[in-house]
Image (cartoon, rainbow, N blue to C red; front, side, top):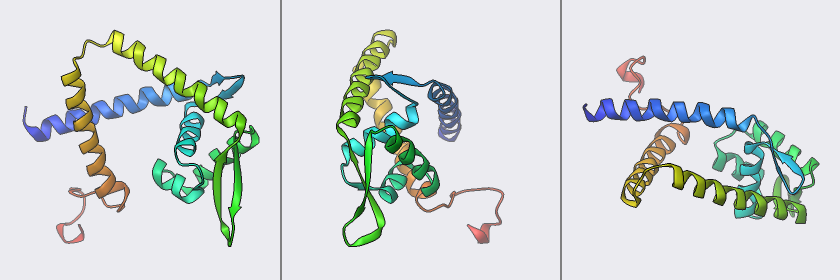
Length: 166
């Protein structure tokens, strides 16, 4: 198989994985008595990793629209997991921080992720070298698509556009 054919197969496998993840995300999970969907837990995790992040920065990091981020943030605020406060001197910018309950939920989620990784490691027949190559490959694919499609909004190499419009 040629390299472009392998890349095409890799992308199709990523779409399959995306569909599986999407199905998993539809099932809420409880962390210290708080029911969250995967999208909410990973939003909370990113806020925990970047305390004081703005909603705009959160949108950028999660490749979401401002509207979708606002909906996710509203849900987390309503559940008492985060605080959304206006930045001093800037009435348009909101900064996000975790509440104590948010910290507890995030820690429970991190423990769940660790146990899930242990489960996957025991059920996948992969060597450390295979995993290292996979991680490097994924980082490069994500970097390429992030830079040339998500960040710029332009999909390089589209065949449905006249060559002068690329």
